[in-house]
Length: 199
Length: 249
Image 1 (cartoon, rainbow over the protein chains, first blue to last red):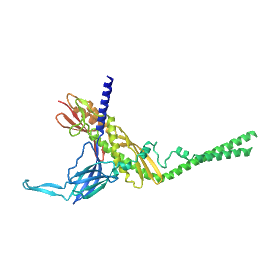
Image 2 (cartoon, rainbow over the protein chains, first blue to last red; image 1 turned 30 degrees about the vertical axis):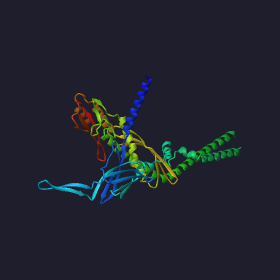
Image 3 (cartoon, chains in turn green, cyan; image 1 turned 90 degrees about the vertical axis):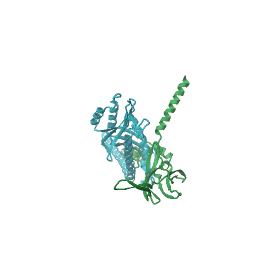
Image 4 (cartoon, rainbow over the protein chains, first blue to last red; image 1 turned 135 degrees about the vertical axis):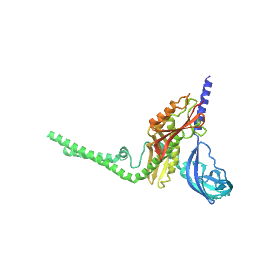
């Protein structure tokens, strides 16, 4: 009976842990705004996007390679530049479609989603023949650059806010106690001498 | 003679005490002034970093609060949601509305996650070496505002000077979250399981709290409700709280 109770408790705890983990789970992506112009890519913006689901980009021959601080590849994703469009020709008088075709835009703006890595430094972009056509520095979002282990623990564990030039009076007096002691000693000597002189 | 001698000594003692007090006071004053002079060198940059972090807390806090309103008290829609991701607050004749504490935790969780990305490793301060610690926060939903108390430990160094700033307290997001939440709670509590949604209750509650309520049928059994507060606007955007109620036939 006791074993059954213990087993039930373990099962319930495991279920609760799994549920809690599932609720906390989410993905982080770089949301990168790109301006494409005649074969070159310019990054117009980089933002961070949180998502509960996997975000896939339209598949294509273009590549985004994520590099860490050691220059190693962390991940690669493929995407397409939406420069090909399909158009219809419409007769303005009748409103009927008279023809159509495909066209390639010389300039287009779009967004891609690239998985976030805490140690990512740069993202390089390549075209179908693996020629570098752009890059973006993402180190400002890197947690590796921000974290330095022991130093963080030291900051976290510190007591109270302490700003240079705003030490409290007790700190100041404690740090300069010897000046105070010297002043008092001189005063005591002067006092004792003055009493002796009177006698 | 003895009396004169005694009064002389008392006089000497008084003078001595006065001199002692003046010396100690001068010493303390000197130290304080010296510290103040030093602080003038360091404070502008420290204050700039502090203001930068405060602005980030305000911006990210507002963003998270608005997002959580749109998602019915959750940053991401919960499992018990419609197909389009609207959280059910009333289903199977039972309230599924999250408590205020649950929503506060949700705001806190995502504020902690998002705040790091707002400060962007302090790239705006290239002359300072800035090391940051783990971010934590305590969120309190009040009637007229959401109060954020954030611990964001940051060590700022330049040459031999080092300063630590850590706590950013009582940062207020001017959103009537508490009023909106209590209005929805009252609406849910006054549902009539057998007859469906209580329209007159919603009208009364919205008029009482100066709120606008939109309703539309999601399907034959589900209604999506949006409580909008035109008194809570950030960047011209009114605060909205969206949830769903399902009434089985």
